Image (cartoon, rainbow, N blue to C red; front, side, top):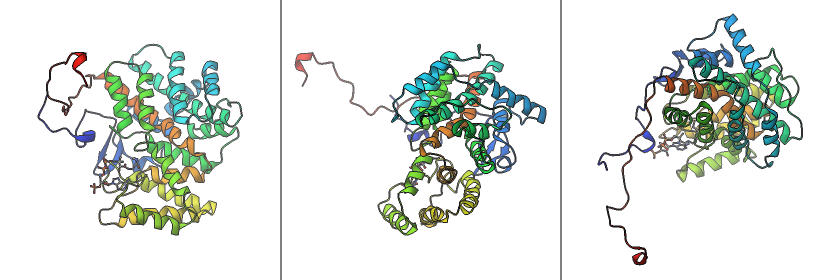
Length: 374
Ligand SMILES: CC(C)(COP(=O)(O)OP(=O)(O)OC[C@H]1O[C@@H](n2cnc3c(N)ncnc32)[C@H](O)[C@@H]1OP(=O)(O)O)[C@@H](O)C(=O)NCCC(=O)NCCS
């Protein structure tokens, strides 16, 4: 037993060292590069390489990395049949968790050297995209489409979902969201992944645990919930009335707030700019008006709470015509790279996670015989 005070949610606790990512003066950095410099200037595969190998790839290396990702596409038939067998109502995140777990039995990479772990990470990148696209198509009564070579990861993912080439805007914006979502230091799912890694369990198990953590609406599930919220209102006036009531009742609003960013999330700002352009192109200013009707009172109230990246992401995906239950799975298709980078880092310099708890139960007492129990 300890008398020390517990830190709910481990707020403010430094739970380990990492060279993968940090938040410096309120800005997210992947291995030293600011997210503002990366977004729009590098593609998702460059970010994936940066996270897994520590450096941005030169052109020839990017080409070979892309070929490596392509080489791992294609689901084992048993995994496709498992996905097909899942009832239609099963949420996509649950399908993804189960399918990734099952695909682990067909892991094409053997061994656990640093090189093996990096190759397994690249396989998981391809696998998560394959599973999301296959489930999307099977749910819509269509057979999965094979991954096409010679495309960017985001473009190929859209092609595998829709069975036709993606338009340039959709491919560019999906790629941008994958870049923004790729990594975020010791967030809940990454911490889950590192705890599992710290037991010397395998990478697939760590990723399956992380998928379960990401699913929650306080974490990755927020992009779907944010769009669900916006969809509830017919116009900005309805949204304004709702937010006034919600704030008066001191209730939380999904898509806002962050443990780390108390003065705004850069990623949300970057994506929001793009989302506004997209909405203008699509003639959906009505949705932006609802978006702003909720956002403005949140950021101007006495104690402002700013949007996190999930708030503009939900509407961006909606404007791209993507179905709601794909939003959080697309987050997985990106964050898989951060999870794997952290798995590798943890496994290269490991000490098992085993914190203490503060006991709040009954004081020490004798075990009563069964006849004396109430
Ligand atoms: C992200 C989140 C879980 C962080 O939680 P946390 O660090 O434990 O923050 P807290 O819940 O302690 O909130 C701190 C304060 O901000 C307020 N706050 C935080 N998020 C809020 C939100 N989304 N809406 C309204 N108020 C919020 C809390 O009410 C609290 O106010 P108080 O100090 O007056 O009591 C939380 O902000 C949240 O639930 N957001 C909504 C879900 C979401 O969008 N998740 C995606 C995160 S990327």
